[in-house]
Image (cartoon, rainbow, N blue to C red; front, side, top):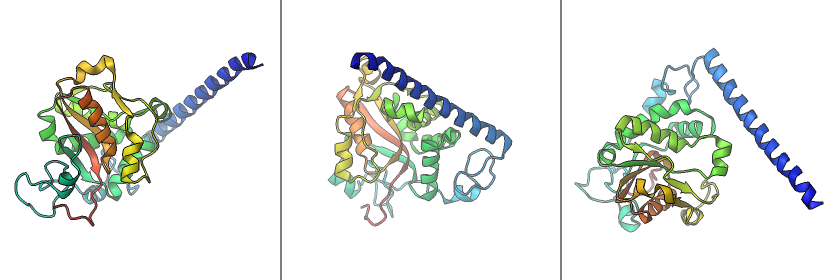
Amino acid sequence: MDAEASPTRSVSVHLRGALSACRGAWRHAARIALDIALPTLCVACREPVDGEGVCAECWAKLSFIAKPYCPRLGIPFVYDPGPELLSMEAIANPPAYQRARAAVRYDDVARTLVHALKYQDRTDLAPAMGRWMARAGRELLDEADALVPVPLHWQRAWGRRYNQSGALARVIARQSGVKFASEALRRVRPTEQQIGLSRSQRASNVQGAFKVADNRRSEIQGRRVVLVDDVLTTGATVDACARALLRARAASVDVLVFARVVESHKTPI
């Protein structure tokens, strides 16, 4: 019975996968049709907008991160403490990566942009977000040899159909001219969503989850790598990725994200 049922189950699994892919393609085609028929709306407030996906009023609400900030973690300082002074967090818990930079604080408008890109097929937002990231990470990109996106596990990539970090990295590569090493880093086991987990739980969740593919090690060995992601919260994911890249003999690893969480109740210095 089991031997006879196995092919049937296999056909059923493939059929369900095909139907799921068709439904995804239909939703994507429907969204394109609506975009043609209707004006583009601001992703944050739903007012009509041209181009960037964010109206002027919501753009003004984005909190772009500029100096002074921690030279290691990119956390903005309330005032300028002087050159090369690290934040307390960088001193107490130094990461595996060398430097991190973010375009904006992870506030309400930034969260809406990230969620739209990540979960709502709004890949049209990637060009603007990527340009802002390239500007924020110019000092990293000027020294970089390769751009590596934080990868999705293949099971999640199958359901989502694209990697938002890869979409951002592709834009940054065009802006900066740095090589886009899209397949160098892999997520070798599925992990839980990090949302709702504590700092220690996040670190445990992604421990050992990333690896540089054996046939891609030449793209990493001796290279100065910039790791690209959408949001930096506790840094557990990018730290795990950085460790995998350093194990593959990367010369250095920096991190560039669109938005980073800044805990306002903490004193940054």
